Each structure stands twice: as structure tokens, then as C-alpha cells.
Image (cartoon, rainbow, N blue to C red; front, top):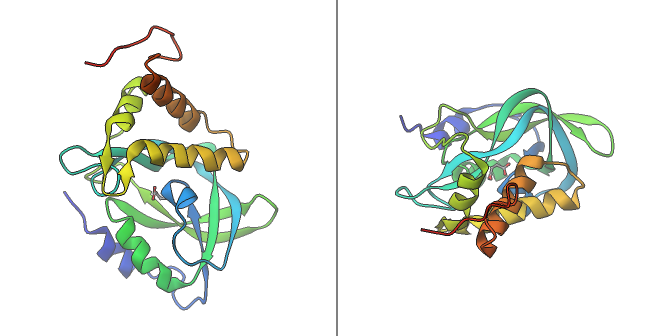
Length: 202
Ligand code: SIN
């Protein structure tokens, strides 16, 4: 069932009445912070891992051929590194539209890399949303990202953008870096960087 996340997010009253609030970004919000913010600080959230398991019908693919983008999956022992932005509440309205393909706002605790904590929001596309694709073998996901594109551009640019910022933040994210390596190997024609077996496109 397709759910109107914009309407659900708009009804959420977390941080209602606050002058500003923290928003944690881990996907496109890492490399495309084209919204006004008061400050940004590298941060981590506990209990979640970043996975390219969400379909993108609107930004990096189409309804007929969705791309593959990041969401967060519950993993109690894990920590996800990203960027926290302090924004005014009005900024959520356009962000709800940007994140409309399955992402709902959740409240979570952010731990800033330079110390301190705060409650904040994070957009998560949970496994029950209509666009969720789920897990697939790394090579398959890499080829999927390599061939997809949508109104916001090639899907590969999303993956490269996330990987670049994570590198700048000094974050260890084997899923993202493994997917990036597999995609670049596929694009260069060298195939599977793990087995070295090589693959040719159909
Ligand atoms: C985020 O970046 O925090 C949410 C998912 C996305 O826009 O890619």
C-alpha cells in the first residue's frame, strides 16, 4: 500500500514549538544539503545501519525502473555516522516532499563526534514501505545502481556522493564502500572485485 508520507510527517508534532531542531542526515542529506541550516556537526546514531535497500522512484530512478538509495535498518549493536543539521521547523516542509518516497520522520538521540548529545529527527524508509527493495547480492546492487537514473541524476552519483562524505568524515562503512568498489569495478569492466572473476554485460 502506498502511504502519503508527506501527510503523516506533517501531522507529527515532535519538536513542535521549538525554534530549531536537529536533523540527522545519512544519505542524500550528507552530500546535498541544499536547504537552510543554522549549523552542522558530524554525528552518530546508535542502533541503525545504512543500507542501499530503498527503491527510488522519484530521484534516482522511475516508477518503472526504481533506483537504489539508502535507508536505515535496525541493528542494535551498530552505529551509523552522518551529519547533523540544526534547522528551523519550516525547513521540514520541503524536506518532507523531497523524502516523500517512503521516508517517515523518527526521533532519535544524536551523539556529536566532538562531544555532547541531542534529540533529533531522522528520515527512515522502513521495510513496510511500498518502495522498499531490501537486500540483494552486492554485485546485483552495484549493477542496479550503475544502470539507474532519475530526475535528480544518475544513481551512481548518489552512491559516490555518500561515499565521498563518509570518507571525509573518517567513517568506516563497509556496506557503502563495498558497493562503491563493486560499482566502479563493474563500470570499468573488471567485474567482481571480490572474486576477480570478471563479468561482461548482457
Ligand atoms: C537522508 O539522507 O538522511 C535520508 C535519505 C536520503 O535522502 O537519501
